[in-house]
Image 1 (cartoon, rainbow, N blue to C red):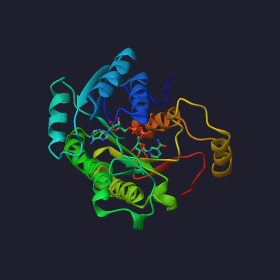
Image 2 (image 1 turned 90 degrees about the vertical axis):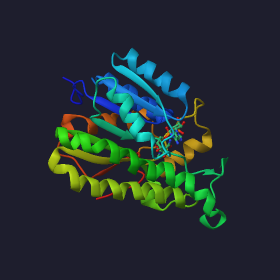
Image 3 (image 1 turned 180 degrees about the vertical axis):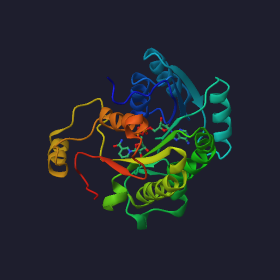
Image 4 (image 1 turned 30 degrees about the horizontal axis):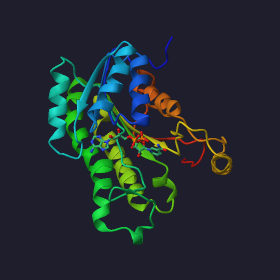
Length: 258
Ligand SMILES: NC(=O)c1ccc[n+]([C@@H]2O[C@H](COP(=O)([O-])OP(=O)(O)OC[C@H]3O[C@@H](n4cnc5c(N)ncnc54)[C@H](O)[C@@H]3O)[C@@H](O)[C@H]2O)c1
């Protein structure tokens, strides 16, 4: 028996990058009937939708800029035109902490400029508000739904040089907690998965990377995309029906919350 059987439900995953692709595939493998994949990059969304189809579910590739507040209505229209309603929303798309003006750099807050903050806040927080606002109403009406957002342990630790990123993820966690308390009576659960560093490079970790992982993580290694997908699949399933308003660390023990 599959503990996390998704029983033909329809899921929508934002971001078809490293982590999002694994989440979409895992949901399909565990019995989702359809998985819509939303990304700014059409080819990436199409590639992941094709993988979903190979797992036996309907795969829908949707090209959209989630920072455009009108995008949720178009996303909803695309899914509904396939005759389905979204049961499971995974807010995964996010800009990493080292994004500043298109450059990649981890900067102390005082070295950032206000105009650098907007992309992070718009995708990692505001876009989640817009999409969730559009998609949760129908879940409430149907008395079943799952909202899962991917956040980061940087919002719990106060890691240096990630202040604005941490603010965006902390804001999402607080939003999710409040939403959980509003929609719980309707059978909609709302949870976050908080990640430590997920190893995504096709190359093996260097000696220095391995030393850092051994020092920072009680489990002695960085996370994998499978580690994330497993938790999301569980939270999306009926097995997690009495779990809401929580932030689960998928972090090798990096942080701890009572
Ligand atoms: N990878 C890690 O170590 C790590 C650690 C902590 C948290 N996270 C979080 O996990 C999530 C997934 O991270 P990832 O490593 O897979 O990221 P990624 O960069 O590989 O993928 C992000 C995807 O989002 C898409 N995207 C970017 N802007 C968009 C927009 N405006 N509209 C639609 N799509 C857009 C990108 O095209 C990309 O495919 C993010 O929320 C990230 O903050 C990741």
